[in-house]
Amino acid sequence: MHHALAVDRWSRGASPLHARDARAKLGAALVFLIAVSTTRPGAHLAFGLYAVLIVAAAALARLPIAALARRAALVLPFSATFAAITWWSGDPARALALAEKSLLCGFAALLLIATTPVNDLLRALEWLAVPRPLILVIQFLYRYLFVISEQAQHMHLAAQCRRGIGVRRSRFLARFSAAGGALGVLFARSWERADGIYRAMLARGFQGHFQRLAPLRFSAGDAVFVFLVASVTIGIRLAV
View 1 (cartoon, one colour):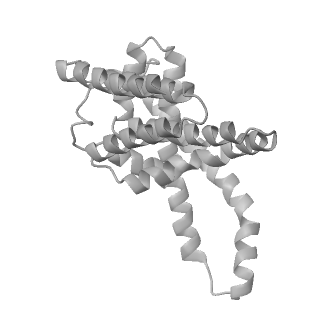
View 2: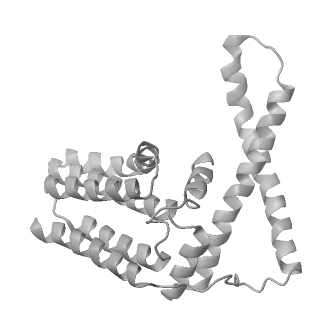
């Protein structure tokens, strides 16, 4: 859960990229994702230029590039299976392109979230006429990640306080045997806490819609930002 906490902290930063409207960043990210996903396999120069562009954006946002890359690499185990099957089927170029596209798209999506508070991002999705039930599911899922994280921290602290001094060779087995029960208790406590939060929201007048605190404002700088990102990205895509 510390990944979600770190990304949420990054999204509250102050930089030229953080200051852009959420709709502008979402549009630029969509253009980038479409360009990357439609680039032909074997166009390693294009993938390298995409990487330079996204690393430059992370540097502009004053974010830790190494930490972003480690978190973006979490998508590789999921795409590695399909890449391995494609490699064994006799198409190594497509397999390598699958891994490159997964990493670039994961980095781009993470950069979007790390520079945009989730409420602003969801409001941008609402402006794009994304179905409200889907937006609410994303909103609650994101909020309850922090509930689970808090409960996990409490349980970890309690376990540390109750842990005795045992034999070193049995420590791993003891932790492994207790993992299943701890996981069940974690989700039971998280469900109870989440249910209490939802009832409190209903008591305060929640009617299935999060109120906006401030209107979205799309400035000329946001238009220039979208135009520049789209021009560079499409230029790289067409050049290959």
